Length: 404
Image 1 (tube, one colour):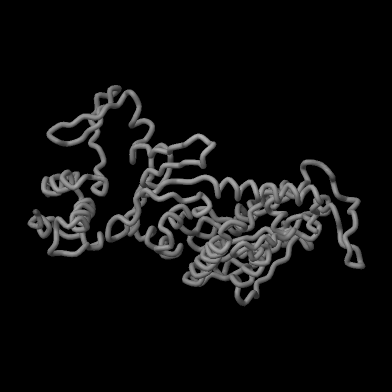
Image 2 (cartoon, helix red, strand yellow; image 1 turned 135 degrees about the horizontal axis):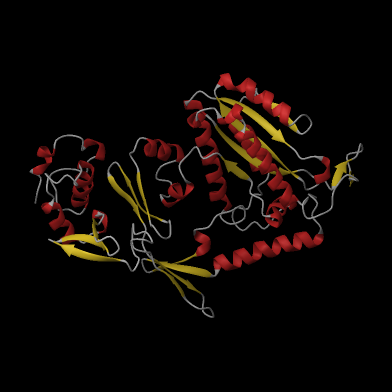
């Protein structure tokens, strides 16, 4: 089934077993406790329930976003021409060899998947789609194999109703039937697409080892099931917050400037996230280790918010009047360092808060609010509660007396 030979199945199972062994036998230490990598990893055959839950969250968040903007759904299916199909379906329903198939390295299932991505790019780059304002267009798509092992894709596009006619005309012109199929009357597009997603997944909850040829096909060829437009916030942000907010909530918060994300300048990893009430995530160093018989490994965080240029040999830290600066030896320029209250020790935070100069043009109310909330969270200020950062939009005089 799906063009898999006995050797293909064996190779797929080897990938699965090797992945499981690696993740089950490599560990990290967090707060003195040891956790296997497999506890943090998810895909179709490892923590599959979490994997499916995230897929559903992504699909439903996009769908609700489309509903909020009153967008219309256009459901498109794209297939590839005959030269990509090793087998074809005979009149009796059986698969037979396709004489038009080109048996070379450019017509494998993996290359066919890449070709489908090229067709997808032609669609999103066409003016009938690209001229629509970015906030009013989105899509999600799933890749699925025919029984002969050649992939095809299903895509749910969302756009304003007035753009649908031109968009459908473009699809039919560029990809005439039977290469494409267009539907504009799907009643529940998210359920319709999830039907295609879920049927590509085996129920592997618990210790179920019953992986079908369909799942083995994805593993063998390294093909992703699901893609979406970049309408919602990065999955990296959603994942590190562990479900505190759903994707749609995070996207709304980010666009409303209620969410601030800091990245390490060298590793590009998220190191801190602030919402309206203060810090909700900070990344800590994690010690990575392997079972006995292997060498130990450690991963250390790079200095927060320091780019490669800032830590070059031509820049050195210095302190002037108890204020941290970086001196650029090339330009002799003093650069005042970014202050992150959440990373200060208690004494430094206490002194820093009480030293804030309300007349300093470099001190913003937002920064003052972040620092005050950190003081409250540590118990240095007890007669007021943590406040939303949006509240810090009035005169400094009100807050100037809150000093301890």
